[in-house]
Length: 220
Length: 295
Image (tube, rainbow over all chains, first blue to last red; front, side, top):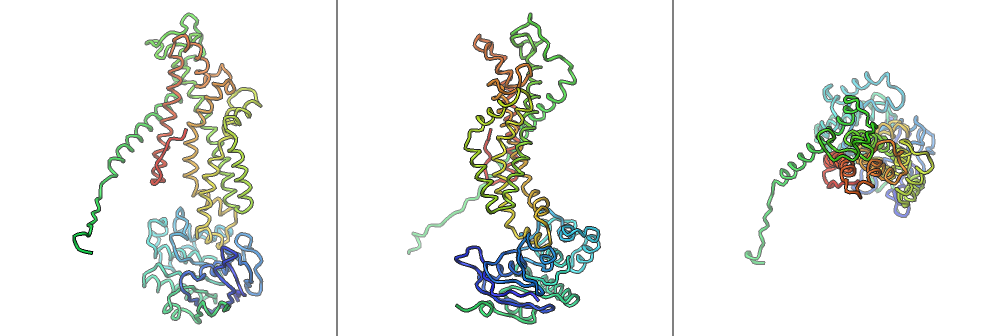
């Protein structure tokens, strides 16, 4: 279970972007979080991915309360949560070829040996041809780059996936393909999913449960 | 509002790129050509001609430029062309090594400050500000004065006083890079702090740091000359552009212009060429900022 307990977070303590949010994602469950733009969804996604320290509140992963964030978080906890961001251009290192981009988490965690097979397998899953893998981010389209970013998020087999507006920049067919990839991964591994978006139709079709931002924050 | 008061705006598109590009290319070719000539002269001439730059010929002292001595001779009859080439060799060596030293220190300090952030960043950058408040020639003189004259004290002096601007550039670049989502993605993928810096941040700042290093070479050469001219840099028997100009001061007053002019030209032309090359590079990687000469 990925639990967010009365999380308050933001970039300025006097005006937090996220106020008192409580949300639980069970293993194998997919939760859609709907909300208007600018309401703090992405900040919440960063907190859930242990990338941003909340001002108050708690994040609990399978009963383990998270005490440290970013680099200080234990590597097993950090890599238990995979993240896909909204803008593939910004979330891919412009210097890495797509194959290196996908393999990077394996190399960073000392699993270099298995990288080649795993990249080939994942490229096939997300629909990237071998010639695309040799290109750099500026040589592929947004959709192709987002496919690589999804592959990178899945490469360490995370127990939770956080998709922060993953499909906002994509066309309908790529959206469908990537949602299918994520769903196939979830059914085969039983991972939990937190999908953040402002597209109601997409979330209700994609997720087991869709919650609105207003219902997860405490009314004040 | 009536129709005849409506102002029809016309947008005139001019092909303004072409004129700028041609001066651009000219500057690139001239600078690259001069740097190539300098490099060839400095690297190939001494081993090829095998002449003794220290050969004293008192009978031929202070000869004006002629066919046998194209740049004339100095006050003890040494050939000035040869002295200038050897001097440029020493000055370039000092310039390049000092610029590299400054860049390595600056990149390390700037990357550390930028990557750590928070109070570490503030402390380091306030220290950098403190150092930059002292005029760096003064600081350089203080450092060379602690050693016996030689090449290495000059390198250390210039290297230790010129990393501040590089540190600022690298820190700013690291700060802007580290807030990008791809760093978040790397952290989430289990990358250690060290790996994020080495794999994602440093490759991103290398073009800027490299440019700063190249721009630092002419600056360091001028510092070497200034220190040697003040008698604090290289020992007077070592030919460097600074020592040559320093040694020629006396004869300039007596009307002999060549011992000062030629080392001066050897200092100005290669440094302008290197700065010009760096300027072209800067416009390539950052077209919005006009390049200026920073010597």
